[in-house]
Image 1 (cartoon, rainbow over the protein chains, first blue to last red):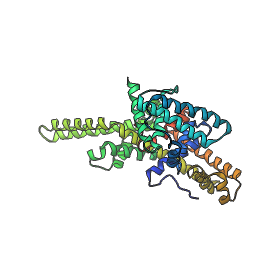
Image 2: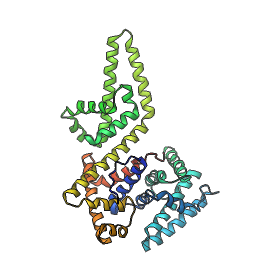
Image 3: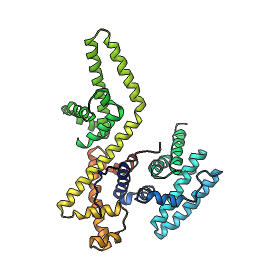
Image 4: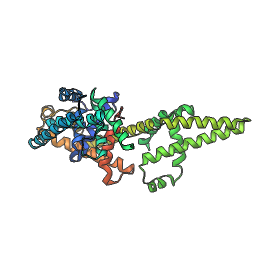
Length: 151
Length: 211
């Protein structure tokens, strides 16, 4: 076991460790998006994200495809939350977030009933933790959010 | 004020104040602290402002730099014929550069502050554990929450049951949370805002944000 303080020289390690520490401190106040951030920033987080998203097309032909990804993930989230499978719930939540960001990025459409501030928090928090091409999708979604807010 | 020194120095470097005044950013920040904290009303004014202390200090630091520019321009005018125009042009140039760069230095400042706040909370937590004779609990906590090891995997190494490991990790989390809460309260957050502050810190930590 190691007992690192937070003064690690690699700034990406600092970021990941910091996110996990803060998620731990939120405790029962952590929302699914913060738990997902902790999962994505785990030592094998990038590998896990790639595995969860491997069958998703980052540029589907229609926005309806993103809607279907979101609805499917939402349905499974309810099932997994009942059986208490944290990792499966996190995987579903990641696909749910990807669908919302993908629809925004590619079609400029909001397919979420969530408040825009919470969508922005999700994009800001999760996007930088994802490997490409998903990181780029979240950057485009963030730009769309900014454009929508100023229009 | 120690917790604000590095974030302000980072901000100073990102905006270019150090280069502008040909000095180390930390020296400029120390000068700012000496200038403002000598005034007993400075922190009273902050308390009445409703701002976080870090935001109050960052704003104050920008004002301090403007005063330094004004003093420099005045010195230039006094020391050379026609130097006043040169001084004003110089100041304007720097202002326009700063406006263009405002977002990135602000973000870097918030990131550095979040890291420093965490480091401060960690230091307090480890000191508390040392005092209680529970220094080893930090390693258990780190293995579980940061390295992602399950309680039962740690239990064998720690010579404890998984339930005991979970309990010891929870104990560290409680101390750490309280330590960070104290940092945030000292910065001006209200009790009801602590959770929102922690969520904001999670976003602020990203080196390369979405936007």
